[in-house]
Length: 470
Image 1 (cartoon, helix red, strand yellow):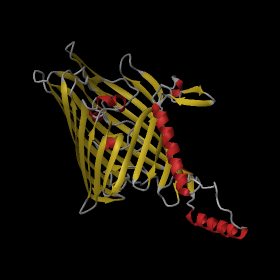
Image 2 (cartoon, helix red, strand yellow; image 1 turned 90 degrees about the vertical axis):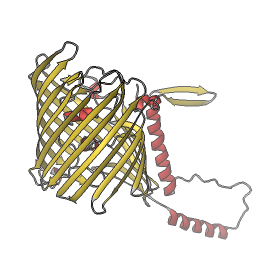
Image 3 (cartoon, helix red, strand yellow; image 1 turned 135 degrees about the horizontal axis):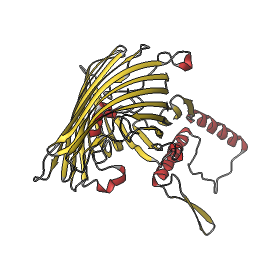
Image 4 (cartoon, helix red, strand yellow; image 1 turned 120 degrees about the vertical axis):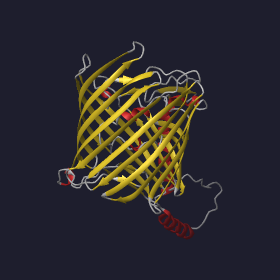
């Protein structure tokens, strides 16, 4: 798939340009439409019609007075556009704030070294993510976000650049505050760890338990409609519910493959240096046809081979995921834990397996910062160093540790078990620059249900990342 593929066609004396990539065409049309709206609203682009045929003649005095009056009216109604470039990227905004357009993105470069597993030892690097996004507002009550990822390849393959994959494409209506509606391709609001963006996670990769969500059939991102609300009466709270079809690449299957989710959070204590957070969520997916469901677990390193996983689980009719979460911030210290349980309903003649996983983690900012909690989202956001390097400081230094586990053995399905210890150090050099290193000690018990055998082994994985977000 090409990012842009042009075809030149001539019809008579007119030359046409045809864009073959539908996603690229959608983005280009969106940018043109947004800038047109901003410029028109600002008075720079005048698309009104003018009556000039058979116009009556007037004397020079009247013409001069009319010209001066129109100039004054134009000056009073003119809404200039302001633009700026900062750590958040590029922004264009109309004077009254009705229209905004932001261009941003993230770049993440990874390296790993795997040892301890026979015939699997490796040293690799890749462009983990190269994401470009367009976000903004329309008439103050419509938010939008379109984003594509161009990363995901090893550096030996086209310098790590890949064909674009849509990661977000939605509109959000905020006119019924505090209730918002989001329609489009978006992240399913399940699990704090899954909701927090990869820019602001404590570790380089999410835990083992997250494999129960990050599944091609179940799906972390789906096309759907989400209703959300939040408030701070007696305590900070959020509530979200959504209905979804299939993924972006198989939209035509939406009627046969649908899902629903819900998430509720409470934060009885919220201030810049103290947080107590409690939450839970559920995610149901229904399959009319056999979805070719299986579970494969990354050892918290996407460049390492998967150590455990099920074979194909035939006859799946639906899945139900239940999740609970606890988190706290106490000064420079923060901690977080989640438990996930997935139940698979199959045809009556087949067993009904269930899998589970959980993790617990803690971190500490050596330089005194606190993890940034966002009450209206019930999740964590950008880490802001107290003394960033671009202002003469040393940035924010953080150390962290995590234990995670997952069990994929149930009712005749033998996918294996894995337990991981992860240790990390993060250097948030500036507000938009991060360097991190992680060490993972993985202990896997890999089953082979066909050969009725299993294999236990340990692996050591060292990882590093350089990140720039804008």
